[in-house]
Image 1 (spheres, rainbow, N blue to C red):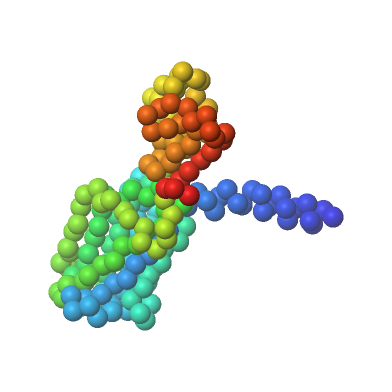
Image 2: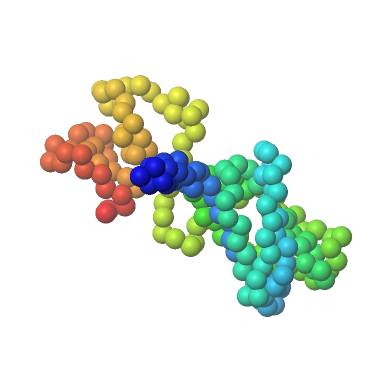
Length: 184
């Protein structure tokens, strides 16, 4: 019985931890589109300095799981090619991003650097998400449409989410606790 209670306790504690990480994956090719196996991929969290590494497989794919939310730069290196670095990547909890890299012929001492706030599009799944920082939360008004705000009301801040309120802000009296996400 104690083992069962311990197992359930560990499961309950571990579940939120899993949802607090992101994942990066992609494919590495050369300019002709040929795969580049055994390329070294490094993801460095700019905020903490933590470095995670992976290597592309025989089909050129790589995966870096369990990345903590934060700002990242990713560097890809392989002998005979210029190294490529992308920075300005912001990962949020439970993001699954895909970043493909094209390595140009050259030496490792040469680096192609792509900098900027890159808008990440998840092409792996059809999931949509919205994250809100505590600063954004605190700046929102306490009174929303004549009522005190409730945590459930923050769903409606996500694009494509509709519910008890019509688009003009009036209450939809034909529905109670109705939430529609992109028509579903």
